[in-house]
Image 1 (cartoon, rainbow, N blue to C red):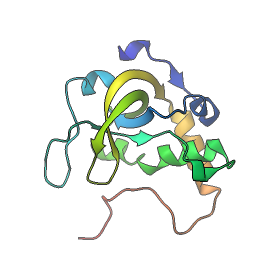
Image 2: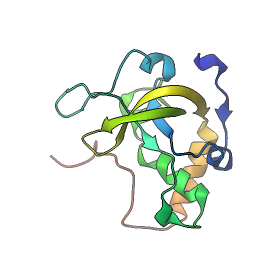
Image 3: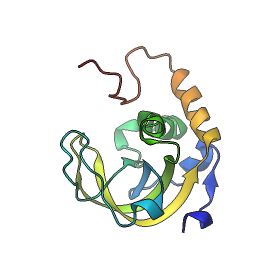
Image 4: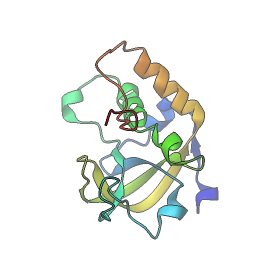
Length: 147
């Protein structure tokens, strides 16, 4: 299945996938996820779906840059590739939301894998986010938090 997926190479291209039931997920891909669900990393509890980030643009975002919205969706969890191994990649899927995870993220059942996200698009998202010059905003990486 995954060999047949197209690859998104730019944020503008990813914007074309935006929709109410479209999500980005960081994992080894649809084949690896087909027979599984996510687990809560704190407790090990099996969750009722796959953790994913919605690509739906919220109404309050109004007429702001759709590219920046999508870039920050990718930026939020880009650390998962380093945390979970070299085969972990971002990919886009159409899915049904079946619950909320412990970080209030959507848990989804994948209905249709849509595309891989290339490194070029990830680099572009990082550049877009960094260009905002916000000292109060960053990824959702907990691995460097103090214990």
